[in-house]
Image (cartoon, rainbow, N blue to C red; front, side):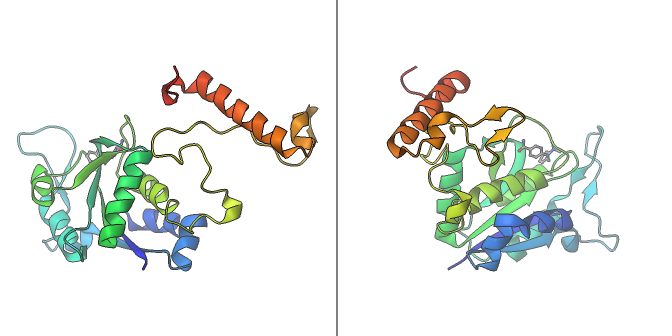
Length: 234
Ligand code: 4G4
């Protein structure tokens, strides 16, 4: 059974372009996931198809109106247990642990809905009515929730079993363990000499045990140097 990923946005073309590309696109073509992109403007309630307005109380910038958002979610959602995510700088910070938790909830419901805000944000009553899981991809502000939603989808879809082919190098990378994990060792491919830079000798030795030991050592050293917070022994 394929996971349904539904994105609600004012910029559907931006979402579609990414979801049909590369591994995300292949996962859909292979039937491991299916994407529905919903234009929130289709749920505007007036003849001008208005989706934003000035904030009550004044201030710069526009606010997304509650009715089109709430109607769009209600029309799109098939399972009341499906998680609804609102991408916002005020949300819970995304990490690989949250990705796995969301994948679990989404898989259980067969569906996940991602709501992309734009302008200055969205009417608080939409949040009150929908009770979305508010998620942030990091401490910076973007013009819209579209790029964060695509980040979440990419992180989720690559964890669906079978989505990463063997040649995409799969279940062994940095954060495979929910939270722990180490950074990757350096990797090399052809040519063997590029502008005088050669390949570490051990990798050319054919000695698999030594290669594994070297990679582990590099991985540990790099983690200690760049992300000591990931190691318990520090
Ligand atoms: C909701 C409220 C997410 C959505 C306000 C969204 C950064 C992130 C938006 C806004 C976003 C993130 C316009 C501030 C859209 N920016 N860090 N922007 N803003 O995940």
